[in-house]
Amino acid sequence: MDTDGGSSSETVQVRNKKVMLKHHINGFPKESDLHVTTETVVLKVLQGSNTVPVKVLYLSIEPYQYIRSRKIENPGVFSSYPPGSVITSYGVGRVLNSGHPGYKKGDLVWGTTGCEEYSLITEPETLFKITDTDVPLSYYLGVLGQLVGQLAKLMGCYVVGSAGSKEKVDLLKNKLGFHDAFNYKEEKNLDEALKRYFPEGIDIFFDNVGGKIIDAVLLNMRLHGRIALCGMVSQYPLDDPEGIKNLMCIIYQRLRVEGFVVFDYFHLFPKFWDFMLPCIREGKIACVEDIAEGLDSCPAALEGLFTGRNLGKKVIIVSQE
Image (cartoon, rainbow, N blue to C red; front, side, top):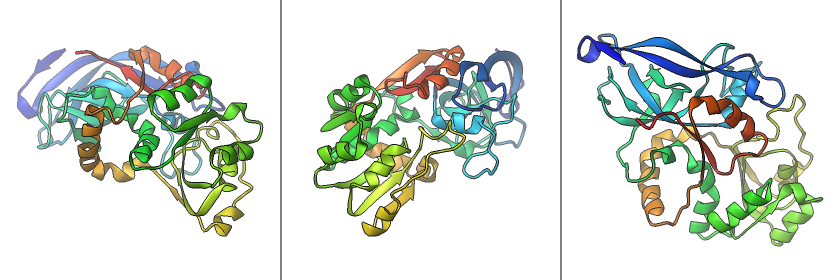
């Protein structure tokens, strides 16, 4: 790394490895849809700029990366990555320099970064300062997806999870502490399976999968039940997504169905973290990660997300400093 200049106008020249989209993806993602390259970049904070250059330490692998790697005809929450661009991620990094008064050199941060060794953050409102370092830094990347069932159990709910392999079912029951779990791929009739696990019906359903499971759940919801739709990973690669047949159950059971997008709630993260940190320290919440090393592992990691290879939150170690 070469540096010159002073304080806010400091120039940093680095060799930057990064993960780029080769072309828009059709069907399931493949390693060959992405490529890793290295080039020299200059990370310069211009006088008066609020940009924040960051050295990336950890990255998460997320289904939304695949969504944005497809050609989105009608952009809504997400827009498509242009072919030849760096894909983004949630990352943890260390501030190299800062034009923003809220950050200084050496600060640890998490937020939206590029899948690269160094990111020049031009929208620092997407960053959050890390003040608690007595838990692994990678936990800031979203073991949060594993928390729904654990939080529900802490609050007194009876919790049953579904997963696509025996290993993941064992993880839900033995590591995350769910009351029960089943492999939806082994169930010939999902409606019957849900009646077996919830003979009195379901009050709350949190869904990341979509497809046949939500159709079966609708048949088993209790009066005034609630459904939070956070993802539909089974449907993303399909050109013709599966339809839902049992929508009338929403009317009959007076259900509340609502989409859940995590960045709508980023402003609540400090309050949430104040609650979560003691739970993690006291062992009330378990965090399971599936860790790979180096940016070169990103293409395979994204493919594995859609073939069920990951066991826990998929995290990439970019740098150990």
